[in-house]
Length: 293
Image 1 (tube, rainbow, N blue to C red):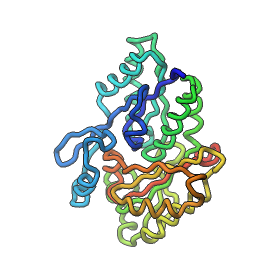
Image 2: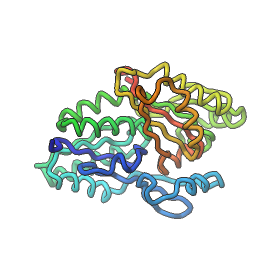
Image 3: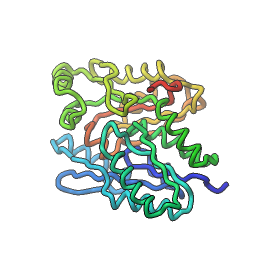
Image 4: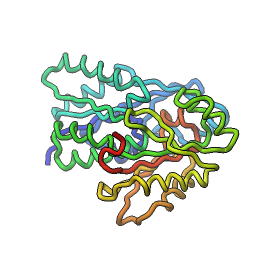
């Protein structure tokens, strides 16, 4: 069946390249700077994950920004040239100015190409949460969703995604202004691992705390049990920032087996990783309808 809707996604979804590298899907790459090197997040295809997080462990503080207008224009124009209406599932407006900037660039492109149909959805998600939404959107595209159906589904489904994560060191989030300084200080001194989530407005929010990583992983599994809707697509997206063993431990704590639960696992990309630091473990799953609203 010919596609009735193409997708534009960005590298903050942290999905494996093999999942998104397909006809009709455009990838917007976010830039980052590490050790003076200006690079593009291409889902670890040209950057070594272990080396990146190793530099952070030695004190490097990578910086990030939203993609340049030229990068966005190329993605929009390539999608338009394909001749199929498209939806861009964008990184959360609650964590970056990117959504507003991309919306402006898209408006300019559509003024030049009024015959085109490209829409943008603020996922209000990031990393594994965004990955889960994109993963299901790819399946719905293959099932023949129209651009209208995709836009309507994404605007509703984004509030059904449950996402929780634990970081090893809160300093990176503190530097980025995404958590209060007092929370970061207490966490580092008391070995408390705050559990974080992404609220309905797309911003970070506290979801609990645990003393130490082992209890933190157990708490993530408990959040999954509390919130998961096993009637929804039984897919779990998991991510790790150079701590694959901990991610595997978390996976083994989840109920069900391969016939009930299918996992999609990927290292956290350099853009998200710049803000969460090495040691972050994340899980995203389908919760009950409107659970994040």
